[in-house]
Length: 352
Image 1 (spheres, rainbow, N blue to C red):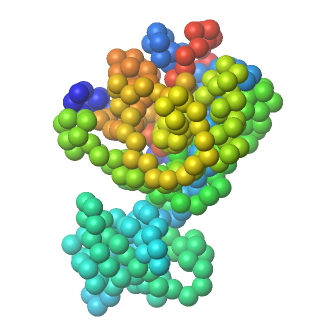
Image 2: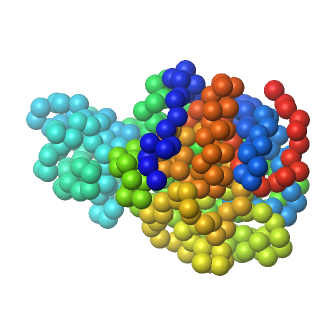
Image 3: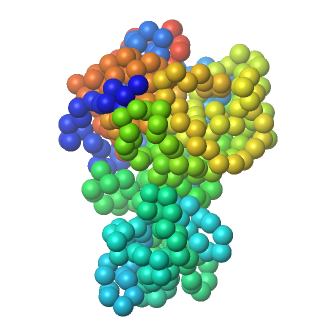
């Protein structure tokens, strides 16, 4: 299986630069994973495709303002840092630009000295370990100095940083948002609950590994970076009960999917657990828990495109992406959504 098998041509103008004013007003392409049948709706129509007794699995991680701009002590050279993973003793694994100016021992000053950092090691793929020193509470300083870590393909300034958070974000730790969840409003979630659909909350702190390009031509040789996840007893019980009663497990986003697939026993049973996952899902993978998936439209040749191809089949996915391009859907983080379903009784109504 080649990485190039997952290439598609995406016009630059289809990359969404700004979130819609109404989160739930984005378009929704409904794809039957068995037949390849497609329907065009809006995200607020998602309730037409959920059934009483289903379980929606959401990722309640919260994005931290992980992008910092500082100056190198002594030279004043500008340095950009992206916080990736918290270690011990105020040490973070970071992505630094430009890396050549961040050798071991380099000291970086942020916010006129409110925060200082020293490069203490260089690790996998050139990431830097930086030890920070400060007075007060790190999270408060980060909130003051840091910026939301929008992906590089978004060039517009984000006016309201809460628009890069889901409405159910709780636990800080992500370097990127679980973007499929950005479409939900509190009102839409309440409507889902009122239908008798269970909502299970899990946590996966999204790192850059999810978004790193696949640099090998043989898909199986790609290595995913580890990300921390947690499934508590309430979520595990909800998911297990749903499966036992014949309901469907519908993940909101690839991060929720990778969380429950990482936590599941071979028979699909979940138990309360936490840890680090490097799970890489591509065609040929047999899903243990997941039935359906709400997701955004992903980058060509990305691990996320490979994941959805594992669920619906590469031919169906690539056909759906061709249709999305033809119909001028908005792509990536602030873009439109897709619902990959197994329900053959979907409405044929088109709501444009």
